[in-house]
Length: 288
Image (tube, rainbow, N blue to C red; front, side, top):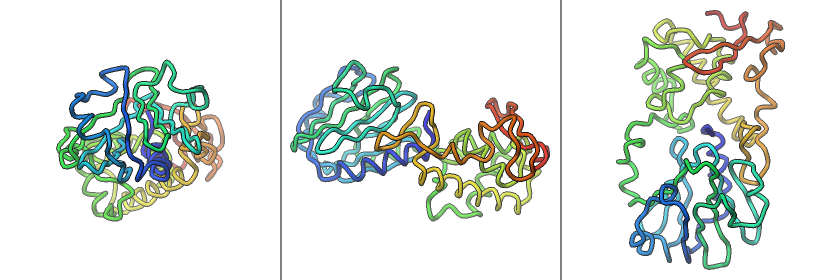
């Protein structure tokens, strides 16, 4: 599943393409991909104009001028492809990014009145587009539970420390992966930030000092921002808003480097399982 930087990369691309465009028509072929009534679509989507594209955790939020918002979750194989004066693809990199659309993976087609189109394709049908009143988005169960955004200006060391210490009895990696603690942090960025802070992923949160958590806060923000700059990380099944593979993985310091030498001390990177996830560590830099 895409992590925060991948979804943010999609948001940046869409934000440059679809605001101010007016929706002419909406069609779909799978109810679970588009769980909205025809009356709501006709009333609040058709003839509405896009105002902006936001993100909360791993969910995209497309705000309309009808005071409604289209929530989009790409899940594992979702992609968004804009076809107009230019063509931009974002998401799972199968042939739908470059082939004629709609195709057999197209679940939702949003046609704009200027002749351009936004396609939501999803091979495995796990993703969805849900239309809600904008003011109701915050009341969605997921939105009520999800933690703060790591890239918000308000995400201080104090906020980070308070959130993490709510999981004092678990491993630090489990705490980082918990979406109710922090929004959008996944396996890659947990490993990368922990390596940067010289903290073993299996360390129990309660054993960490405030100084260590302050360094982890700094490293987490660093790796997330770097990944967004590089267009995301998931080179195997994800691309950015121009259809290009994310390049952060080329700059990874520990993730997927098992058997290679640590870039900091020269020890051999190991792979184990922590919090149920494949985990990469340096046995010398990150003491258990």
